[in-house]
Each structure stands twice: as C-alpha cells, then as structure tokens.
Amino acid sequence: MNLEGKFSGVLAALFYGVSSFFIIIMNKIILTSYSFPSFQFLGIGQMTTTIIVLFVAKRLKIVTFPDLTRDIPSRIWPLPLLYVGNTIFGLGGTKKLNLPMFTVLRRFSILFTMIAEFYILSVRSPWKVQLSVFTMIFGSLIAASSDLAFDLVGYVYILLNDVFTAANGVITKKKLESKDLGKYGLLYYNSLFMILPSALLCYVTGDIDRVLEYPHWKDGWFLAQFLSSCVMGFILMYSIMLCTHYNSALTTTIVGVLKNLSVTYIGMMVGGDYVFSIINFTGLNISVAGSLFYTYTTFIEKKPDSENPISKSETVNSVTHLSVPRSVPTEKSTQII
Image 1 (cartoon, one colour):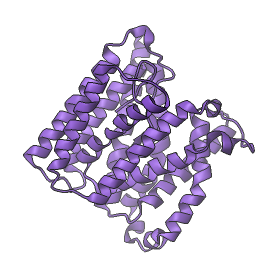
Image 2 (cartoon, rainbow, N blue to C red; image 1 turned 180 degrees about the vertical axis):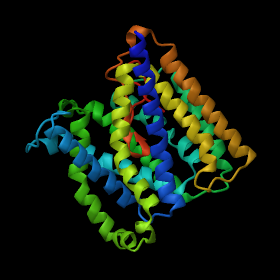
Image 3 (cartoon, one colour; image 1 turned 120 degrees about the horizontal axis):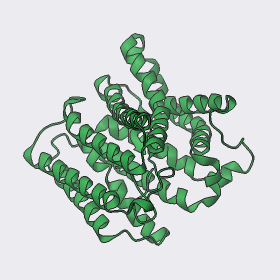
C-alpha cells in the first residue's frame, strides 16, 4: 500500500471511530441530559432522515438499490419489524441505562445470536469463541448484580434490543431472497415500511403531545444535536463501508472494540447516571476482557486469506447503536462488538 493509501486508511478508520463513538454519546445526551421525552420520536427522526438521504442519493446515482415493487414487502418481511424493534428498544435502553451498563448488556446479543445460529442455521461457534462470549456475559452479570442505578425497564429494553439484534442477524442470513436488495435497499425499505406504524404508536402512547410540549425546541444547541443524531445513523453506515474498503474487516472490528472501550469508561462521566461500586466496576472490566479475548480469538488467529474485507461489516442500531443487527462470528460470520 502506498503512502496515499495508508493515509486514506487512517482517515477512514478515524472517521468510523469518531462517528461510532459520537452517535452513542449524542443519543445519551439528548435522551438523558436533556430529558427528551420520547425515544420513539427520536427513532422516527432517524428513520425519516434515512429515507430522505437514501432517496436523494439514489436519484443522484450515488447509491443503487432496486425500485419498490409489490413483492419487496414479502421478500424482506419480518426484517422491517425487527429493524424498528432494534432501533426503538436500543434508544429506550440508552435513555434508561448508564452507558457502561448499556455497553456490557448489549453483549447479550452475541450470546442470543450464537444460540439462534446453532438452532436455526446449525452453526456451532468454536470453543474459544464460546469461552470469550461466556466471559463477557459473566462479567455483565457481575456488573448487573451491583448496579446501584438499576432500572428494571431499562434492563427489559436492552434485553429486548439484544433479542431483536440477534433475530435480525440470523433471519437476514436465512432470507436469501432479500440479499439482492443490498444494505442500502434493506435500510431504505425497513425505514419506509415501518415509519407510519412507528408514528401511529408514538401518537397512541401520547409521545407526540409530550414532544410538542418539550421546552428545548428553541435551544439551538439541543436542536443541532437532535438533527445530528438523526443524520448520524446514515453517516455511521457510510463510515463503516469506507473503513472496510480502505483497510479491512479486521481493522474495522478493532476500531469498533476500541470505541466500545471508550464508551464503557468515558460513559461513566456522560449523562450523570452512573453510580460507582467496586463489584460493578470489576464486572465491567471482566466483560471488557472477554470482549478483547473475543476479538483476538475471532480475528487475530484467523488466517489472512479467510478474511473478506468487502463483505464483513457492522450493521447499524442507529441509535442505539444504538448499534447494529450483527451476527456471531464463526468460521462463516463476524461481528463488531
């Protein structure tokens, strides 16, 4: 690789790392620090932005995906339902939980995916991957046992987010007929088909009224962060594609791990809702160690020729992540944690 290529690779990795980090921090500030009343409305804002950006990009021939036809809903169903569940519950978990606990509890999605792949796809993860996953889960349970800011609703939200993430990853692999839509087509049609049901749910639950009465709409700094959060989901997906293109799936994965380490520790100071305890902090570190071992086992030990730098990438939980719809890494799949 020449000097210009290396420079592009470094910039792409930095772009992904910064985008991935700031979308989580931004969502946390909006939902917790500013006490924004509806994570559902924020999810609708992100879906709306995704539809507009991808529609314009398609018309300008920047991206390509198939036009809407009558058979597309049946080809991708139930992926839109899983997408909106992943988005909404991810944002709900972000609002209710402190960022360190949000990050470690998100790792249950890896366990759920591993179980689903075994029973649905008959894929068994190597024993080292299983050991690393169980280490992460063990650390998460220790941290949860002494979570002084425990919020039952938040835990339910994040575990449902994990279930939707796992289901989305497995069913996407199983529904071969949806793959010709590409990542842009899936993201566009998932948002398009679910924005009206999401808006209806937001209206029925009274969130629309609470949003209209929210006092910070005239606050320029809040408005800038809200609009940035809506756009960041698409920017994150684009940054992942660039990072993987100019570097490799391994580089993208390691940047994702470093981002999660940053969120775990810096997140203790964001939102003002983390309460320190020795047991909780110990559990967080065990889970982090498990995630590092997971990355080493899954990627560092793999032979270079087994890596496909174009196809392996992280799928976006916009918000949340709230990151991501990812599949458990096996000999046939990888995941950024």
